[in-house]
Length: 297
Image (cartoon, rainbow, N blue to C red; front, side, top):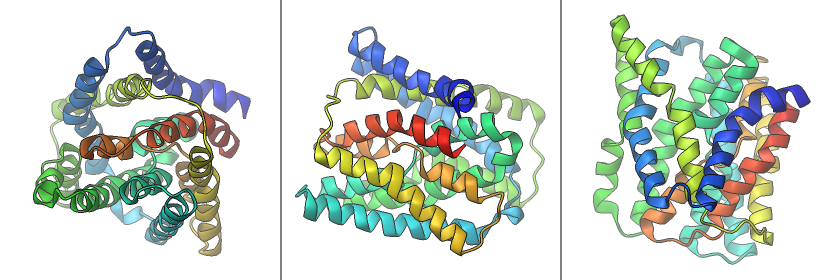
């Protein structure tokens, strides 16, 4: 456990922590971090995910395990929304995004590099499957529903259609399905650019989150607990009862135990929804997941 923490998880987490420190000390401004994040989102993340989807073997996907994971997302999301709305009395849209924090994991930029450091190529199929699912379906679902509820439905489909990560997934899937052989220089360029996606995005995220207080409150602890304990436990139970592939189960549980993705925070900023709870949830789940991920791995 200690070796996994120090050699596989902390090196990835260090970029987020470094960004937080540089933001708190004023070495990198909020505007600079947003620019870096935008470049990573428009250029580096698509370059990372395109060759991943283009080369993966879809026929080897365990769709039963994927369906179980998706069902757990739906159950955990509903429970988290009710907890935030009814128990903690948060506003509707804030509760919606807090529930998103519970089920939308920082998979591509955090779990993916960690899992490859720990498991090597064995992590390729399960983690790629979750990246594809969350990017193509969960991501689009939350963009559209939040836009509609915030009264901005006229631009929702345009934002989804123009999303560079979704475009990279679509192009990668087409290349994969038609068995198109890509030029090696193109793949080399994509891998070269994609290698910077995770560190730059995590660094920028740390700077952006550094503007928020860390003091935990009952609602922060409650949502973080559902994310780091409730959701992984639910996924483990569903995959165990569903007799999922033994090679997939630990990786999907590991994914479920990862920190909240920053997309809920980004959507809250876009629509003017308060972030004083959402941002600390992202921060605390990132910190506390060091323990849960080390233990599960």
